[in-house]
Length: 348
Ligand SMILES: CC(=O)SCCNC(=O)CCNC(=O)[C@H](O)C(C)(C)COP(=O)(O)OP(=O)(O)OC[C@H]1O[C@@H](n2cnc3c(N)ncnc32)[C@H](O)[C@@H]1OP(=O)(O)O
Ligand SMILES: O=C(O)CCC(=O)C(=O)O
Image 1 (cartoon, protein in one colour):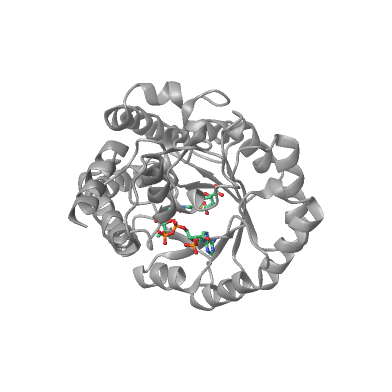
Image 2 (cartoon, rainbow, N blue to C red):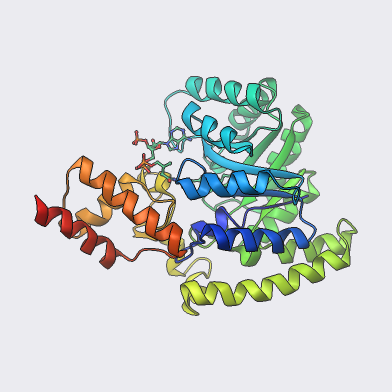
C-alpha cells in the first residue's frame, strides 16, 4: 500500500537536498521499515540521480524501484537505462496529449510496470479525468497515479475519483496528496477507503512546497486496520525521529514553522524546475535550488537580481550549481548563484 517518495519528493522540500551517499543510507533505513515500493530519483535531472536509481535497482532491498521523469522519450530512455522502473508525469499544461500518449506507449513497451501521474487532478471535471484514466488503461499502463499536485482537493473529491477510476480500469490506482491546505492525511485516508492500491508518502511529509502525506501517520492508521505490522511501524517511528534531526541539520528548525499549511512560507516555494517552467500554473515566487532546478528557475532568480547571461553560460552555471548540490548534499542559496553568475558577466 505505501509507496515511499522520500528520496525524490522529499528532495523537493525547501532547503532540502541529499547527496548520493546520503540517499543510499536513507534507502537502507526506509527498507528496514518494511517498505518495498520506492521512487528514488529523477534520472534526467543529474548524473547523481541516474546513479542512485542504478545502484538501488541493482540491489534486492526493494521489490520495486522507480525513477521519475517527463513523458518524453529522452527521459524515458534515461530512466530505463538505469534499470529502475519507469514513472512519468504529464506536462502541467498542454494543447494536445497525442505526443504524451505516444511516449507513454513507448515506455510501456520497455517496462510493463510503467506508472503515469495525471498531474493536478483537480483541474479536470470527473468525466474528463475518467476519459484520461480509460485511455491510459487502454495503453496498458500498470499504475495510474491521480495526484493532488496543488494540494487543493478534499476527501470527498479524492474518494470520488478513486472509486470511479477503480470502476473503469484494472490498472492499479495510486494517490499522491499535497498538503497546502493541511488535508494530505485526510485525503490519503479517503483514497485508501475508496480502494486505491498505493498511497505515496514521505517521512515527515517533506516534499515540494509544504509536502505530502506523512509515512508514519498513514502507517499508524494502517496498523489500526491490520494492513501493516507493528514492527514496521516501530521502525518508521525511530527513522522519523532520525529524519527530524536530518531535516533540522539541513533546513534549520524554522523549516517546521515554514512548512505549516495555509500560512507557511514553504507553500509558495518551488524546487522542481518543471514547476518554475509553468509559472502560470504554479504561483510560487520563492525558490529552493538543488539538482532539480532548471533553466526557467535560474533565469527567474537572475532576472530578479537584474542579471542576464547568455544561453551557453546559463548551461554551464546550472551544471556547476547541480554538481555542487549533488556533491555536498545541500541547496544553493540565491546569493551563491548570483556570485557564480557574476563571474560569467565579468568575463564577457
Ligand atoms: C508534480 C511533480 O513534482 S513532478 C516532478 C517535477 N520535478 C522536477 O521538475 C525536478 C527535475 N527537473 C529538472 O531537473 C529540470 O527541470 C529538467 C532537467 C527536467 C529540465 O530542465 P531544463 O531543460 O533546464 O528546463 P526547465 O526546467 O526550465 O523547463 C522544463 C521543460 O520541460 C517541459 N516539461 C515539463 N514537464 C513536462 C512533461 N511532463 N512532458 C513534456 N515536457 C515537460 C517544460 O515545458 C519545459 O520545456 P521548455 O524548456 O521547452 O520550456
Ligand atoms: O509522484 C509522481 O509520480 C509525480 C507526481 C507528483 O509529484 C505530483 O503530482 O505532485
